[in-house]
Image 1: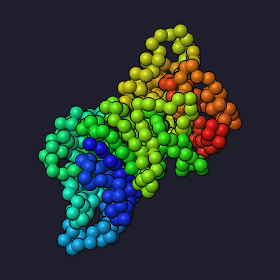
Image 2: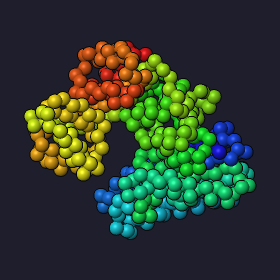
Image 3: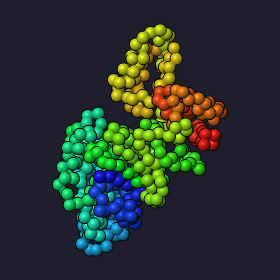
Image 4: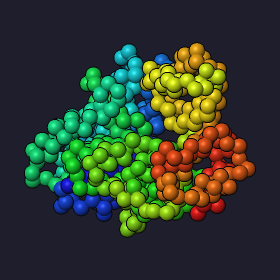
Length: 436
Ligand code: ADP
Ligand code: ASP
Ligand code: MG
């Protein structure tokens, strides 16, 4: 069984939704994961923010604007009166739910309910469309099988235990539709897998049902060798290993949700990145194999904070790094990059929620310096210990750019640089021109 995920642009208009059947073979048993129609989650985020700010008038205005878009959407998607009225019921249900939240005490719990409506709308409307054109399908509620624990970690066994029986209930049906992004949390509340999380849903379902392949259908022909939004002339990469793809996704390649590779990797399920606008294009195949002797791709992650802790007491002191890392652990703040010297250590974080507390505690071990507005530039390639020359090529390409940190050798395929965000574009372009 395969899992196919279609992103926001791939379901972004009635015409695009209808065109999905050029890609989906309805006679093959598969789970199709849909994102919200592009733009919808952003609008829902704004609605949630308006409610959180107590601005019910603004929330109501935003709800009306979004609802109007869906009124037009269903008129193009559905033709027969019977199905049009089903589509209308779907819209009325979800938009009254949004409006009625004005009567509740609005907290983060309600906010999660708001942002979940996008995927619920897209999948339900697509299901009505499939009924209208006579394609048998079953709509599976992701909230019945997708769950995260207290640490926001998805539970693959829970998916296996709860999704497989749902699939088994319908031996006569081949096409199953479900929502990306949304889930329940440890308290049974509606939650989500963070922005871009539909990729993660697809990989988690792939892992949960041990599918033969996961396909991520999007608006570009695979993982490119640099960020196509910033650099001209980027090229798709035919083949990546799970580790390489994970590294690129984590360090900013927006085509994949940062964590989405891990479930597929754990169960060795191949992941293909494919282009809905050009279904014949080769795309990117992500498996256990990696192409050798190559620099493959560059990605960038913004909003990074660098923290330097210097201490003469570090000299010859064992246990110093443990103490430093324990501070970050206490505040559940993960570290991305690390560089050390005999008298100091620099680390980077992206979650600054507890930066104040962390700084205060670190101050007891030495002097602390903070640099904000930093960007990690991640170069992925075949950088095993026996290789030579790659680091020199990278550093030569950025010799005109001030570097805050350099990290190499943490794995066999990553070289990371920390630069000021204002230097990011020049760094990406210069690396691209000189490495590819
Ligand atoms: P979807 O809505 O289908 O999930 P996304 O917008 O999340 O699509 O991801 C696809 C976009 O990712 C592309 O349109 C492209 O602009 C952006 N992107 C950023 N870095 C890369 C990269 N290295 N390779 C391919 N696309 C990338
Ligand atoms: N709709 C969600 C978002 O826009 C999830 C996704 O598209 O993957 O972030
Ligand atoms: Mg995405």
